[in-house]
Image (cartoon, rainbow, N blue to C red; front, top):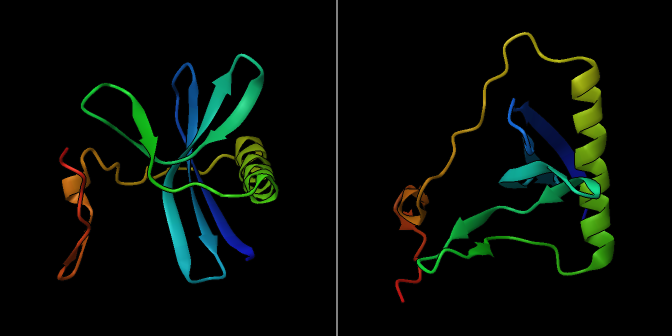
Length: 114
């Protein structure tokens, strides 16, 4: 599986530094990854949703440590390039505030209502 595109959307917040969209093999995209400034430096957080109990659950995430490292390296590399050469007028991605907003044509993604 190859990473074929990484897009960075800079943010001006204390810990949230950017959103990232990553495309695999030119045919599968993951939106709403986040570049976070943590206590040990920058890291990439996978897209997640907030559960009713206040905890967060990843929506998508790599299974292997190797793929996680590959994703983090690609996203942080593109983040650093974008910081060095910021776009004139960045357009942030459409943030998804609830699972009900996930829909594609006639296919709605089911959500766990437990």
